[in-house]
Length: 232
Image (spheres, rainbow, N blue to C red):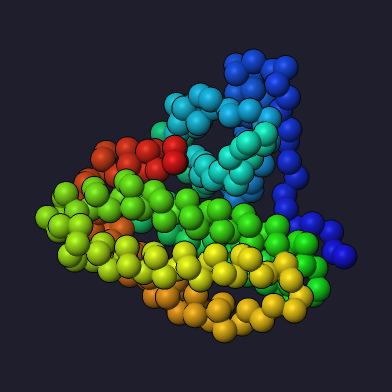
């Protein structure tokens, strides 16, 4: 069995105060080069930690929860090539997450192809968690902002199509997740179907919904929306 392809994890015990946790987490982040990731793991929800990053490392990081209880909370914090205080756009932030998710999905199937079904299952679980979270923050935060600014009702226009495609994506995702750790479960047709929907879906978002949202909101509101998305 191949060695795990997950990044190293930094564990934080419950004996640390929130101030100590934040200090150690920021120190670990500051040691990163642009493009690198630190994985932070806690045995309780790290309340206030995201707010500290948003205040003290604004614009420099991406925040992606991977596990949210019970018992374990795991967050990947990626360092961006950006100056502290830089503003974010919806298109940049969410397109980055598309790329991150695509990479996880590909790595899961690479592990499956080499016979490492445990690794495939673990990687796909992180991908599935991330894709469900991505869909959630689009439907709860992004789409309502887009609809309000662009004047589209929720049941018409681009976001109505996006919501329909989300349901199709989630159905395929659930079916693949149930079988990816089993050697005798055929998945290629399901994976192909998911790619057809998800690939076109992401392109429409990156070329239509995200840019139009940024244009409608403006710099300050787009940056604020990205901060809200990080909290989902």
